[in-house]
Amino acid sequence: MKKFNPNTLARPSVLQLKPYSSARDEFEGTPDSLVFLDANENPFPTDYNRYPDPHQKHLKSIIAPLKGVTTDQILLGNGSDEVLDLLFRAFCVPGKDQVITMPPTYGMYQVLAQINEVACIEVPLRSDFSMNASAVVAAVTPQTKMIFVCSPNNPSGQLIEPESVEFLLQSFEGIVVVDEAYIDFSNSPSWIAALGRYENLVICQTFSKAYGLAGIRLGMLFAHSSMIDLLKKIKPPYNINSLTQEVAVQRLQNTDQVAREVALICSERDRLKTVLKSLPWVKEVFHSEANFLLIRVDDAAKRYRQLQDQGAVVRNRSGQMHCSETLRITIGTPQENKWLTAWMKNC
Ligand SMILES: *Cc1c(COP(=O)(O)O)cnc(C)c1O
Image (cartoon, rainbow, N blue to C red):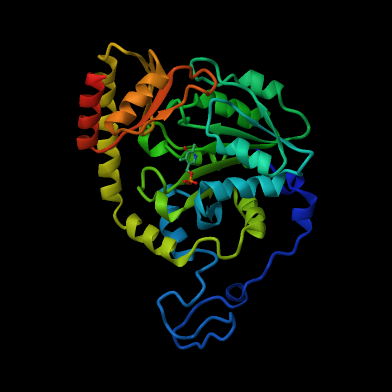
């Protein structure tokens, strides 16, 4: 097992800080017989007059067995955005430290780096969207705290080769963050299974894609418990509200339904891929293990406009590295996909 002590990498100010201790931290448990006069809440019931559980115990107790982790290996955030931001704030000293990203990839890593005044070193993927692992390792400096791997990647839809991720985990002394927002649409296993082998591994997943709950804003981070402890020190105490916790618990009671939707989205993806390949103006349909397809077309701006005129909004990704003349299309319902392909045949 690769040993790693997050405290040697953390910002000195984070190590020193004494976390805010909320009323519900100091007194745990909520037996009905107790009278709660500790948090300045309004005592009259509205269903939501009480602060939410800052540790999300019930929700984590359902997530843990589902993901094959223990509850102390889970951090929940207000979307993946929040858990990613917490990583920056825990480990990167503004104006000094660096992270590495591999464009074309999810834009939020770069935005969060900028917000936190952290330099973002870009080591592009190859033009076939595979990772150039030796170039990534060559770009590491003593100031490099994190490397972001998005797999399956957005916008390509492709999985990043496991051997390359493994190489980073072995050769990099900092944190390897694997963003698995789309892992449920892939046939490949999650990196969660490797948590026991690598203490410098962090995995992010989300309720926004396969779970169909983008509106509740719930992101998950899985890591060694020492990493989770450090991140918990700086998270806002009540970052997951009661409504979000309730809705997530309900949805997790119906994972069969989630699995059915994911299977349907995947079969629709493969069907749509076949249709797209037959269109004369579509030059390439990239392999996808996500709930979207990246396609290369003759004229992306023109095709984007045509589709919008007909009522379909897709994403023009032509401005991204290696993505000239590409559109990214999210897989809709079977009915929506039928309309889309009918419109596309008229373009
Ligand atoms: C959609 C997406 C997310 C999800 O972010 P949330 O803040 O959880 O909604 C995370 N990472 C990638 C790569 C995504 O495409």
